[in-house]
Amino acid sequence: MELNPFREEGLGERRVAEPCNIVIFGATGDLTHRKLIPALYNLAVDGDLPTGMNTIGFARREKTDEVFRNGLEESNRKVSRQGHDDALWDQFSQNIHYHQSNFTDLEGYASLKKRLDEIEAAGGSPNRLYYVASAPEFFDDILLHLKSSGLNESKTGWCRAVVEKPFGTDLATATHLNQVVNDTFEEADTYRIDHYLGKETAQNIMVLRFANAIFELLWNNRFIDHVQVTCSEPLGMEGGRGGYYDKAGALRDMVQNHLLQLVSLIAMEPPADLSADGIRDEKVKVLKTLRKYNTVDEVAENVVRAQYTEGTVGGEDVVGYRREDRVDPGSMTESYVALRVLIDNWRWAGVPFYVRMGKRLPKKATEISIHFKEAPKVLFNSLDSDISPGNVLVIRIQPNEGISLGIRSKQPGPAAQLQPVKMDFQYQTAFGKNSPEAYERLLLDAIAGDATLFARKDEVEEAWKFVDLIEDAWHKSNHPPKMAEYQAGSWGPVESDDLLRRDGRTWRRM
Ligand code: BG6
Image (cartoon, rainbow, N blue to C red; front, side, top):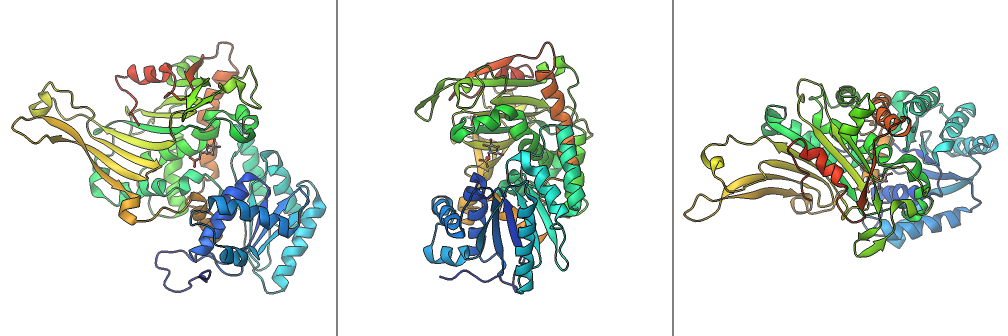
């Protein structure tokens, strides 16, 4: 088998991507090894990567091209979605190079420019995609140096920047970073990664809503009782992650970005068109209408934070959060958060969105469930038998990607006995293959110049406005809301169950 050449003809709905040179800053890191290079490799295997691409890894450690490629090969072998083929890899990796430099060293940028100019002079692509995947403290330096060395412009091609999360740690730092990015690249050339937007099922939310008439009619506060968004992870602080995580916490790490993006996709109005800005205009309106919790009491009433204590996950005994490697033993950082999110607009007034995220929960699963209002308590529903749950539409983001609708059915037999059953759609069975990794889709979109699945600067800033008030109540007030506890391997603290119980509801069992 050969790597498919880029199919210029017959792409159908596929977008046309032009060849470019990708420069990855922070190329020796985990992200490059486990996500970026395997994504490019799988795009190449599928014939989606244009020919004439070069990838240049920019990082501090001394390495030869060969050593760099060998390390990438080793990880690709482990994680590649479509397996690893030695011959294909050899062909693919010929165009991967290493560029050693400190991020603060102007010389390194000058020599990078020389290298890219040479590629261009030899007939290579003039297009440049800079992927900023270093530790966040270097984001500013990298962007400023790209500008001062003139790398942010190409005489005959385009220049774009992809910026990884975290996009700031609060509104002030995010606004500052936006400023630095926009001083170097046009907003239209800036791609802020939120890998949840690249997940196939997240993309399907808009199709489900706007390509099927039956759902949209019911998609409002007249028919929907509430919405739940759950992201549960059995992982703790493996691989030295505690150092980063203890400064971030569940709210900043996942709610500010991934989970509020999912809320936006569920709650947005139909966009005027399918352009990047058409869609992002609608998402940002949702973020603007999130009810802000301005006082400590409001935060205490609507948000639960918690840390795991020791317990058992997947049959293994694990330590509590405060005893994890690189975590402060007196840490006040949450490994779990649950929120009642309210959207103050015409469509959603009175419909709570309950959002929860936790580390060291029993299993890996992300799902959104739309809980429809009950049918009138007459006729069948007047019967005493407990037939809960009613109509719940579940969008499984991962794993077992799919969508199911819970309905009530009559049990066979003479009695009018009701039973909940499911109409279930699974990607695996319907399409017979596994979905591309989020990074495959997102890298291809950035190469093709489609920013639809990337966060715009106002989305990032609006999300921080909501999150900052909660962080302030937790960390800056004299009487902060309490830090609850949950045993590792459980479904979270009782306080989280109480949050819903007070509203007469319960978390969906997963
Ligand atoms: C990252 C967070 O953005 O997303 C991690 O920093 C989290 O803490 C990860 O584990 C989850 O991503 P996924 O794709 O595995 O659900």
